[in-house]
Image (cartoon, rainbow, N blue to C red; front, side, top):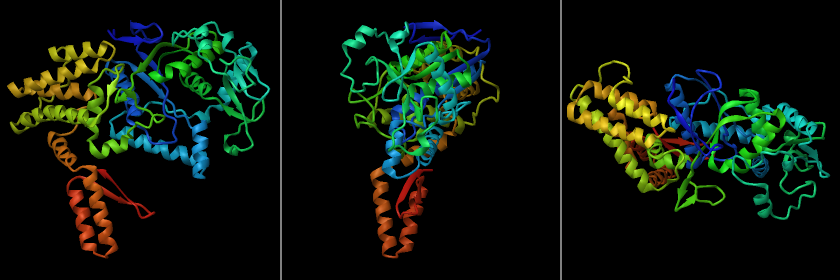
Length: 466
């Protein structure tokens, strides 16, 4: 039996985790809206639930983990029109970039990745159920809205009362709503919108609102009620609040038993976000720092805590991770590679690690256990300590390379992005002067330091770490 406790946002306390079906877990996490590159804050969200997914599986659960892709949305339409490309071309491209980023960070793929555009019939079915119960209506502008005041439990996740929401409301220019608090379920099509975002319905041509997309995808993949629903803290209200209203309003019972939210990454004490312009894309950060360093940086903080981003903090994380690898390197040079046995969960360090992870996935404590084991490796060069260190670290997706692979990668980090850009500019100048020997030498020198150049058809050159 699992000893796992999870902080349930809905209950506002840590609770013993009891799955609906013994031995099995169904988990849904709100994923990315794919119209731009993922930033580090997005990476943290996906990392938080990657760790939860890994620990549930390590604990013996059969986990069905669903993380959706939002591939229809106002921002997507706007960006596609600006780029003069199809919605599908835009979303497919940025979903591929997202997959590249998550793979680099060691984030395991979910078991299911539903796309919103594949579930429009299920969305329409839920809206029809809501309309039949008096919880949805079509406004004069053609939009179908959710009647918030008809759902008694509205505000229970966020702790916001209708009176609080009314006090903070702004004048709503949408005269199609009966109440300013109502939110859209189905948006009537506009003549200016591309044909590929228009679906037929009993209310006329239109497209789904954001909130109904997740209600449809999670119920279609996991059932009307499931174990865990997760996402970033910024989704708690209104997105998750509205999901509850839709799903519980339509189906008449609880939607998810545990609501889990990860904390923000902050830059200068402000939430990292595109709207504030203070974000760093994952791929830009990976030009300066090894991907495992970024993963380690995120795991050193509890998933619910705010995490301050800075190059200095990443440098510190690199130094700390290097200490772990250096311990293994010293053991390896002494001929100690482990004893070939599986991880022993009855060993003292493993027990402390499991206790930390069972306490709402407390990775900072779990990581501190790794450092205690590294000290043991340094002191005793014990094959058991080496095995335990590697085994426990791998649960978190760490220390899975050879020490030399990591330490050599760390050396290439000393070649900063500015130096690489200067080398690319020098290579371009050499090519223009038809000095191909010098051009080839610059490419070879960079490759020797772990930097791969990629020449694009448009004449530009990008780079990545090998």
